[in-house]
Length: 287
Image 1: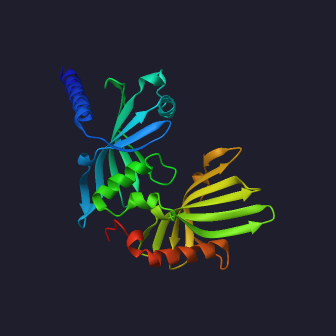
Image 2: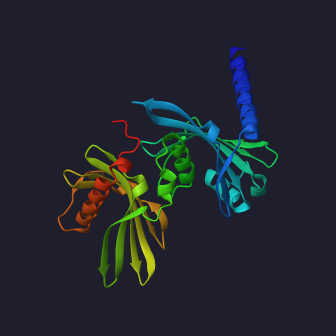
Image 3: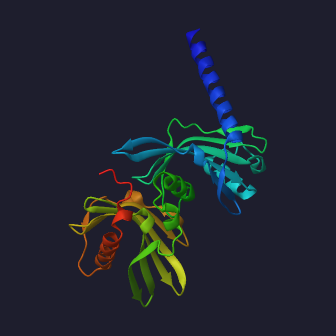
């Protein structure tokens, strides 16, 4: 009897939660962010709430987002989530809502809840979030627009503006050779300086005969005092393999930067940027 009572209680709580979500969907005013041939993105400004802080600086922000789907976007999303058996017809998926927890210090978005709806607001599927998905935001992230606007509402540090700025990408070094050229850029939206270390995403691109043939996209940490660096995350692309994750192949150790190497030129450019953009690179710091 006790077991049945617990099951009934859980069912009632779930029903209550879904009902509240449906009401929120109807009553919430959604601000449009962007649209393309697959997706339309919105967020709810009045539902952005600071839920944790340290030294009076927000360390966790809760927010709600809405994603509308065209047929191609719905098909892509259903395939990514592996729910073809639940939603076999992409035309049925109209939109989804997500409750996010954002960590501005680590530049991450945690998906606490996700609910998928048909055009009439009926729930098609609700994702099990007992183990929430945490995504780090970079230039390849679907969630970047969501992250920037929500963080800007709390801090007003021009995160959205910088993500679309012409100087977003800082050239660290460039190398020309007979068989092609290679250029390496730092994504300035991701730079965070804490103490004597700088953490950022770096995009290295090889070009042969006017065509991109290879990309190395890495999250790196630089020790600005010792002039060492290490790779934390490594994504690789070429025409044959497409995008693959190579993170398992890195050792995670700091390596000395060889004088007069491309890396040496790069860290010098990075240091110049940090000196001239002190407020930006230390934004949201709780130290």
